[in-house]
Amino acid sequence: MNSILKCENIKFSYGKTEVLSDLNFSVNTPSITGIKGPSGSGKTTLFGILSGLLNPDAGKVYLNEIDIYKNYKNKILARKKIGLVFQNYNLIRELTVFQNIQIVEDLVRNNRFKIEEILEKMNISDLKSRYPDQLSIGQRQRVAIARALCGNPSVILADEPTGSVDPSNKKNILELFLHIKKVGIPVIISSHDQTTFEFCDKVFSINEKLLMEEYT
Amino acid sequence: MKKKNFILSISLAFTKKNKKHFLIPFISILIGTMGLLVILSVIRGFNDYFVESITSFFPHILIEGSSDNSIKETEKIISVSFKEGVILKNGEFSGIMQLSSDNSGLDNFNEFIIEGKTPQDYDEIAIGKVLSDELNAEKGDTVQIFSIKNNLQPETQNYKISGIFESGMYQYDSSFILNKGDDLHWTAIYLKNPLKADDYIKNIEGNAVTWTEMNTTFTSAIAVNEFFAVIISLFVLVIAGFGIMNSTLFSVLTRKREISILSSLGFTYRQTSLIFIIQSFLISISGIIFGLLIGFLVLAIIQNIQIPLPSDVFYIKYLPVKTHLSDILLTVSIEIGISMIFSVLPARRAGKIDPMDVLKSE
Ligand SMILES: Nc1ncnc2c1ncn2[C@@H]1O[C@H](COP(=O)(O)OP(=O)(O)O)[C@@H](O)[C@H]1O
Ligand SMILES: [Mg+2]
Image (cartoon, rainbow over all chains, first blue to last red; front, side, top):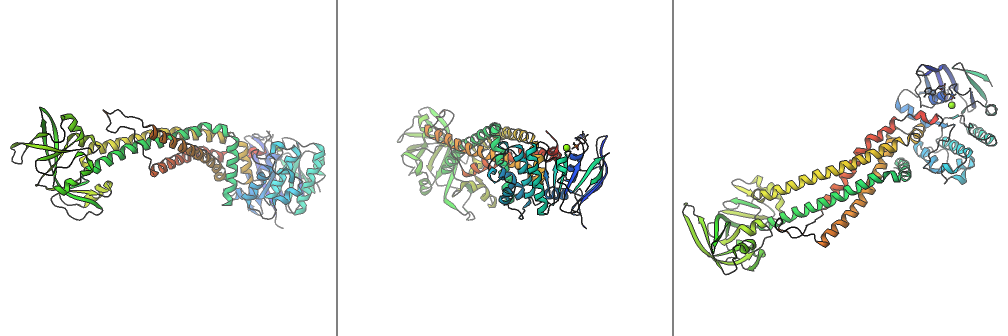
């Protein structure tokens, strides 16, 4: 079976500090995968490598069997085909909610999802002409998820998406990932929080710079 | 087309947010455009005035001997001859250039006659307005002209002033006299477009000169004018250019976060840079539009209040302005070009910003 996202023998160090050593991992089906690890264990670094933002020191990353670090073109393609949701609020302040999503749609030229439908699904239709600064943290996270989805991604990577969200909103946001999985898009979520992993089909933990499967 | 739309909308949004920051480059482009337009229009006004004054009076091409017909688009062809001499009246004297022609050739100068008429007979002359004032010579007066004949014998002849002319050029009005003559060995051609004289003369065999060669003082003055216009313009433009460079760089550096978000979404180096290039383009365009508007206003004012020029230096009474469409286009394209060139370098910095920054906490 073809993998959607796969990495092989990834090594990465910041200067002399090794963060990841010989890391292997793949996602083949529309599922929710959890990446578990305490703060500073290398989750963000791993996500950077998986999403085409950070060149690994060694090893390969494949998205739909394409080596994403082979050249600049592949890297850009990978960034378009991977929906990133960050821990922090990462919308463009000068653009409205709708425009934030629209730039991705225009860039990727997706015709699978309509912005209006996604806004509807994410329950943020009435926020579309607001600016990010006028939203709560939970609402911003919904917009970020909507934006990621709008590019019709092969996979969604969410780096501690509920990290700064209050507990009552946490579940709502996690349910959105269940919805995305149902649409047929695999999701990878990093966290150090147990509630998140209850939504996951599979959980890996970063231990000693390696990734270990924990439970299924 | 749609692909560019979203880049434009991001540029617009960024520009709107940073409006205040772009005030300085906006104003410097505005002043640059306005200054350039006004300077070019004044220089053009002078140049056109000189060219018009010279070429309406002085023949555009002089060919020794009888005319050949190789020149097209001629307005008029007459026969003339030139002779230097000295004019005397009541003890006053002045060096002159005698332009002789036949009756039909002299008719050509009718339009410049402000008093009396062109010479009808061999013993009549017409003199310029300035010369007439200098010598205190009026229509009907008799003057003497001293010259050297072809056989090197000096000769003095009496002439009656049949009329006074005014060409608008100090040089002609102070030193040219018109008279009737027979021995006309130059063909004088007036073209529809005098500026083409130097092109035509290339194909002419034999001895031929153009008005530009005969009036080098003025044509080189025009060249100097244009040279200074270029220097001043470059100076203004470089200042505007640095303003643009500075603000684009500032804009890029204060938007690292947005740039890394865009890169993480799959924007290429070029697309992110383009956002900032378009931004500086938008500022330039608005600076240019306002610069042109204010420039036209200034020109309209100059034309209306008629700024007087010192009469001992300039022969024209008021500061002349004339705006050519080509000068406007030149101004606009230079300004746009400068803003592009000066924004590309700092905009490229946007491509160097680490997209990994988005994943890092603030
Ligand atoms: N730019 C950097 N330069 C040096 N060290 C870094 C940098 N970014 C992260 N690190 C270090 O790498 C390790 C992994 O960081 P990170 O991937 O952010 O972990 P996590 O997301 O699991 O908290 C940490 O020890 C951190 O201090
Ligand atoms: Mg992290």
